[in-house]
Length: 231
View 1: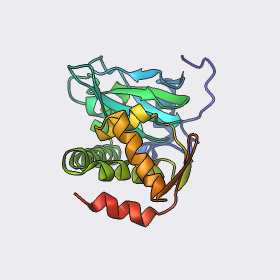
View 2: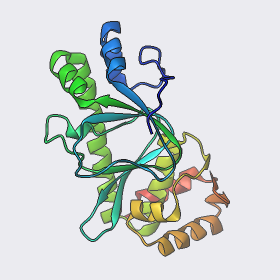
View 3: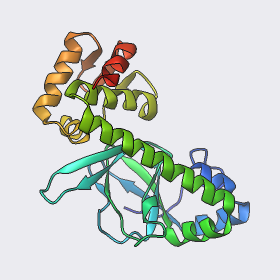
View 4: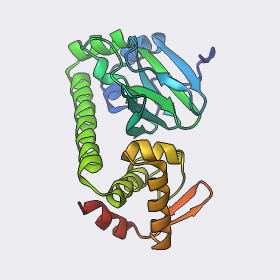
């Protein structure tokens, strides 16, 4: 739902993506005028694969997931998106259609910005365009790594990759409250939920991780990295 009263200032926001640092104060005022603040509850869809992309979404607070919806009704999670990440950039200068869906893994506040603003600044501002390209390239490399993980690694390695990604890039801690369900972990690793549970049990038995409810603690990060390298 839209927040009627904006509580975030584009100019003073400390979470903004690097591309916004290339904009002037006047540009930020234009950005502010073409932005809405949206709240999403856990599980709510932020954008729908195949829908027209009239806006680029910026995650100000919370964690979301991007995923592909397949013809057989199954989902393939592409990535977990933390604060400061953007949703919908691949729609720029294409057919203005979202190539994937995104949903909130926990309650989120999202800034929704008119896609025409991004297109205009990408054409007129070289620094802004360079940062957008860097972001898209990083996403592409991450997708390549994820593809290798789910197609070339055994189940232990796939789940080790996910835990390392969550600890290093999302929660930035070896101790965190897990936002992903077992089904989410299955869709991210292309395993069955039962297989995910078995691997987690194995990791717990080997004292690689400690699990208390939804709280996870990685006890042996170096051992997990070794498992991640194996194919």
